[in-house]
Image (cartoon, rainbow, N blue to C red; front, side, top):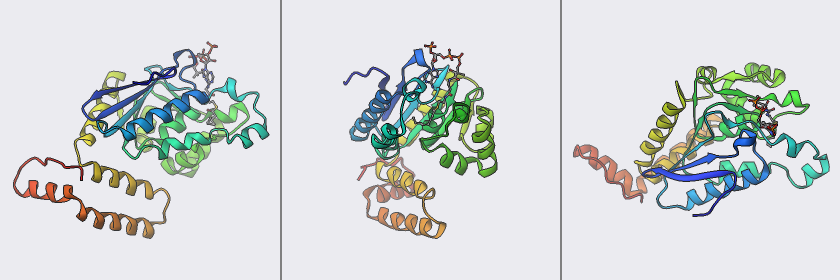
Length: 261
Ligand code: CO8
């Protein structure tokens, strides 16, 4: 197994890969080498035949306290622009076609909040501390926060959060639809995230990838096109073995044994 400096990878449950951000001295601030390692880890989970769903987490104290402010402070416009600074973050949303569950405890600020928003399913503790504080640093969200947070909570609330830089709790994240579920403790959070990933990993890989793809299309396409896209892929799945296996098992009151074909 490859060794990493800023992250840890494991396979804690059958079918489940885990990436743990591990830069405790900087509260998991997302420096460029950390993002490069994260991209590499997700790409290798994508290629792995033993992993079907992935959990991304940090520590109890911090999911990630943002992009690395010390790395960004001296950057000039031309350096950021010509080197496409943070463009590689977008790979997080394309490298992995398998579902990604973010388990957020502690701080998820700036780029940390944006990273959590890139996950397919977001779980958090009630006391998690989310926010887009970039305005306080004289800048704005740069890794999709203004777009993904706005889609999640609506324009007025997103404006308030991004213009004031005020944090919001895990409790609020769940109430506003940013998080799918909220947990009372870090242990319960990890149990919940790994359990959900394991459940997903127990289904047909073909159907799971298609389900993720169509839900993501809802974020990009107008409704009519999205519904049509869904129907086409739904039609396509009649060509899979697993659709036959799943429906036959239902009729016979048996557990489906997926072929993943
Ligand atoms: N970058 C670099 N270092 C950091 C960061 C960060 N974002 N956050 C914390 N650290 C470091 C601190 O400097 C400190 O290091 P040291 O011990 O060497 O001084 C160490 O982590 C521990 O932090 P604190 O002592 O501050 O811990 P506290 O518990 O007192 O406070 C907070 C925790 C409230 C999280 C505080 O650390 C904080 O406010 N951090 C910054 C939060 C922030 O503003 N994040 C947004 C950053 S901007 C951003 O993400 C831009 C995104 C746009 C582009 C996205 C792609 C790059």
